[in-house]
Image (cartoon, rainbow, N blue to C red; front, side):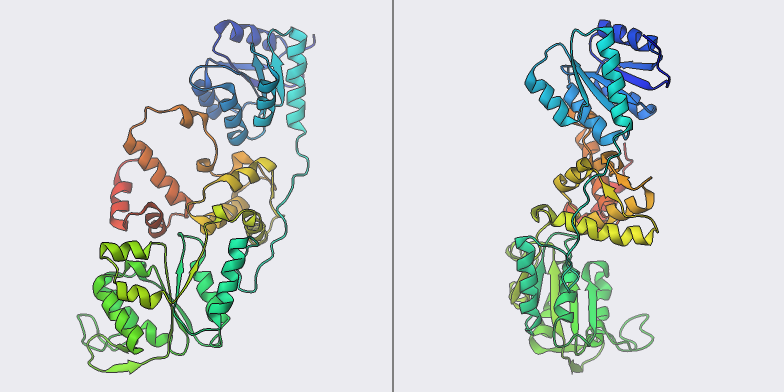
Length: 447
């Protein structure tokens, strides 16, 4: 047998020391660089420390199986081939190995020639696996800018058209990142008042002590620092639409004042006794369950009914089927053009991960991921290892059940924060905690 022309590095994983020694000796004789590991955790540590062209793994091992390692390699190690060996050969085992991502399945015992041939075939196949991969179908954006062809999104688009022809108050609900402001803009710009102002307000982003002044304005001398009179955001929206995002973050005191504005269609500036009539269409949004907040006494029931004249609920993208492919294509076209590069392509495995991921940050999180790939990815092909770590399978994470709860919580918080591009307000929404609690939890040292 001749020696290999290229000194590829191979990692052999088996819980049998004898098997490791035999395979190491055989491969070293062929000129390969050989690393060995007695189990999956040790193998992952080696994979993180040095590039490996091929992993040869046993099927049955304690703690984590070879199938776990195959999936880990496929989703975390770009350009690494995988070959499975086992002393318990079966058709089911071979099918599972190939479906999980192994290129070769070699039953024990095997000869030196069989091992050499399987290794060579696996390395050659991995080297030439840059065939064309399917791209998502073309996006079909609605004139509103919302993208989606699922039944749930068709219902949303129909509701937007009906709401746009009405002057009624609209409550837009849905998880963080689903596109509630886009819906609000679509309603406004599809209405007879499209030429008038559209004024978005993030109620959760304005300190409580300033919110009344920001919304309704103030007169000179109304409070310390009020050196001149200033109109509020309701005044700015006169004749058009004001969009109150995160309306559930308002205090009960502010809810009373907002209720009066809705009922009387007039505002009173802070520090003034005079009212002013305004013609403003009100749209509101929340990612919270307002009926639950009403039952708890943290949201006024009368305000809820005033806001809830028309309700439009945006579904999370995990419930929108193939809409995620349309969204991927849309963001790929946008951010590839911005980065002056050819459009990204996605392997079948990468697309499957994107489709199966839970997307706590919804469309906003997906957009962040695609933008990052367009800027940072080497080459045009996106494979599983190019995706954010929190999306990928980890055999080590799966088998580690000895971590303290605080450590797991801290990791999850950081993963959610990363999913929304570092936006602490959005992360707090997803986690169901306030910003102060989030800051305290982030203040602990990450382990």
